[in-house]
Length: 123
Image (tube, rainbow, N blue to C red; front, side, top):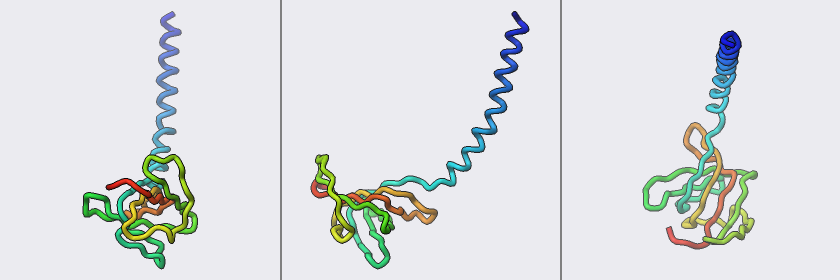
């Protein structure tokens, strides 16, 4: 009985020690993945030539540059509504409230996969 318990204990320790390097190798791969991000506020400047929006967080002076491209999805939605409307980049103007989702690059620029124009609600 004691021999079986020792064998089981040894097998468990061996299995755990062999699985640890596998899990530790996954961590660097996740660190290299782009960091998912979200930024919301009011559009301060838009530059269609550079495909960027400068968005200032409401109640703050902090601004972030949001880069968009042809793969960026543009939508509008009223506060509290479940209805989402597809729009194009030309419908977002300076002063509009937006929520941007995407990935940050090493320079802190958010590359937007989705830009949502908020149609109502105060900030």
